[in-house]
Amino acid sequence: MTTLAVEEFDDRVVVTLHRPEARNAINAAMVAELHDVCAALEAEPRLLLITGAGGTFAAGADIGELRDRGREQALQGINRAVFDRIAKLPLPAVAAVDGYALGGGAELAYACDVRLASPAAVFGNPEPGLGILAAAGACWRLRELVGASVAKQVLLAGRRLDADDALRFGLVAEVVPAEKLLERAHAVLDRMARSGPLALRLTKLVADGGGHPLTDDLAQAILFESDDKRARMDAFLAGGRS
Ligand code: COA
Image (cartoon, rainbow, N blue to C red):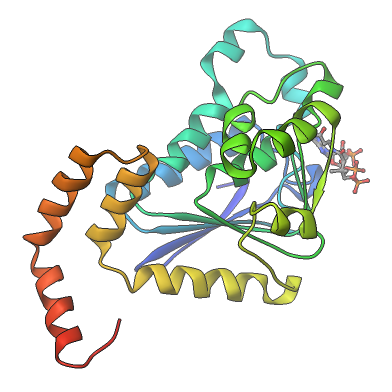
């Protein structure tokens, strides 16, 4: 890995975006390495924590590379595809955002299931200023996260959301001092890790699919037959608490 620092644990993988010379801008090498991380997490489902090095989450897609891309590359959805893959990972992803999360950096954070921010976090989608649109998820994912009014302010009026805005609009779960950000993100992952892994996985699958009485019942039918469910409910009834 040249653009990511990856730490692997039994129940989670921690990915730190690391291109300090370009404010962690997302280039083709980083996209390829994020795909490698996704492949590992698909093969062996674990939680994911994504953060950025050096007081920046990511200052967008790499503009030097974007400038030289044409219609064919746009149609490949290079960044969109890897963000979608992250969003569809079997188990949840948490973004810990310190500093700028702009353009594709913001879209990467939007693709995660939960976001935490430091007081220095700034979310924005300045793509139209570069003559392009935010095509890696912001146009629909941001709207789902904060509603059409705020999304349009960000997408059309160049509004940047600081940490207080992001908290108020529900984009982030918490604002935590930078020095405590990773600790707090790990605490969120710890809470997730205490859930039944299959229950967490099926909940994400069903919830991301928008839920439906049929899928809800089928997923629940799988879980109701699991040894894990019986063990957890027995433990509860015996006085243990999860
Ligand atoms: N792509 C490529 N390089 C980038 C980059 C990006 N998205 N964002 C920053 N960099 C590079 C800069 O070109 C600069 O390189 P240099 O030192 O060789 O000149 C280096 O990172 C540091 O950036 P700089 O602008 O000097 O840092 P700053 O702290 O003053 O400002 C930002 C930080 C994030 C506000 C500013 O870099 C910025 O606006 N970046 C682009 C944001 C953007 O439009 N993203 C959407 C892309 S689709």
